Length: 542
Figure 1: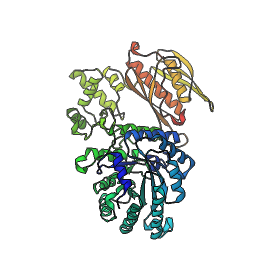
Figure 2: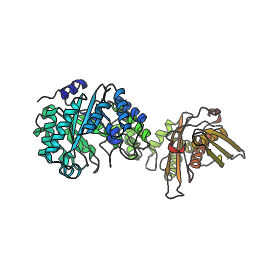
Figure 3: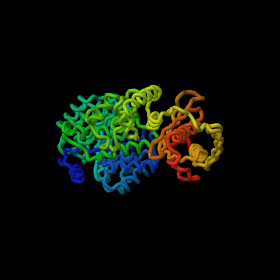
Figure 4: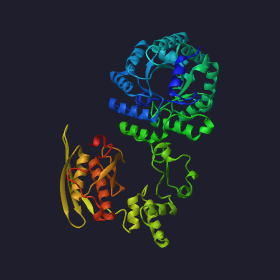
């Protein structure tokens, strides 16, 4: 039987049937992960970013789970114009009705019904026979059909289900009206070879398979989610269910950005692509990180800080000769401005000279010998050597100098439901002592304002991070700040058992570097209580 819902979906997308559809479940499978929950406003912001990214289907939530989840799905459904908004539902009347109501205002809607099919789940989770599972699947698809534009059916724990029974369940779901059939590797158990074999077998044995979109939903328990998803695509799956940054239950889901770029970079191999605007991948990743407060690991593929960074001297030398020596894609293709040659203890002379030239320094060979030696000595002590360190070395200064400003006293006061205040006393190497106070949105903001006043500086804070560097009740915290000043980013860090003090020390480190390296005529004067950009991602510190 030909499935009209499948044809409608292909026609609406206006793409060849062979294109891989991206089904994003960041707001459902990803958001239910401990540490990644978002409020309704954050979910809407992320949903709008995902529509801009170009995802085909956005699973906005599980309406029956809570009133707030219902409201979030309904708000997203009423807002998005191009992306199909999907709601999850168990094969139960209440779930399906709740999903249908939440999707009432969607221009393009899908209800995603699911039921467990494996022997383990049938016996221990559901207490149902095979026939009961079949009957529940048919009833659910029939009910969902009248409440949305498209229906997707998932067989939970499909990869541990008897293949013959899985094909039977899919066949009846498809005949009843489901347009997409999802065979999830719910516990991340399979290998790529097994996944490919299973999808090929299903496409050959599900009745009417030629009218269905087969979908892959892989978890990362063995670190194989992306590999398994791509194997499914190779075997004919034309929808992949994934999440931004790979967030999700336990070890996570298949990472959207990795799947999309694999299909783009290796398009000739896979013979298919997506409609994702890959230039929005990095912005989407960073927005999710900002909304959840969960950082992306540095070595994360595609969107991690190190994805387009090179420290090895051999690699840097190759990159300076030809980008293709060590990069298979351009950083601009994923929304990152440029490749970063990180200067550290493994870096070579060529990368150092290139960076010095970019900073306006052109030392001769004799001067370069001394600069390179001082650079290597500093690099052995630091993880990364920044531009301000190079400036100091090039100017014959000590990049690790502490002065001229030092912290003498620090006090803060926070009022619940109100603003915070801070006072600082600083001592300059020339003998001056300066005391200032300021009010801010929180103690961190107030301290930074007070330091700006005391030192007559303006710090446009662009990055703020705090992390523990020891354990226990007296654990030390490290504050790291990045500030934009004089057309350059400046970095500072401070360590203390008090994170407010650590922040003050980090800010002073930046102020001191600016004072040592930027002529006074080029410094921007501070403006009383304005011109200050609040630190980003302060969390509870404010």
